[in-house]
Amino acid sequence: MLFNKPKVDGICDYCGGKLYQRDDDKEEAIKERLVNYHKQTAPLIDFYTKKGKLRPIPGTGSVDDIFAAIMKVIK
Image (cartoon, rainbow, N blue to C red; front, side):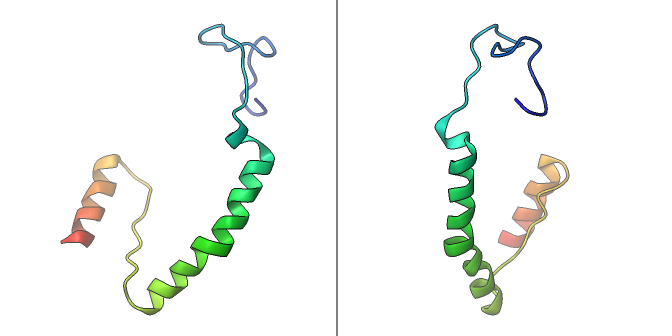
């Protein structure tokens, strides 16, 4: 709604329905998820890296490229 504004405020350009924002997509919810990530998830990266168990896979490229990278790590 900020970077791809609809032609008519509050109306979807595609279906003509009313635009709304889900509760889990609001700024406060996103901030809370980021706080939880840094507290709970980010430390796991260091933990598994130190154990030699973390195998990063780039999330860029085609779906086929990413799938191939995953399969290479699994095998």
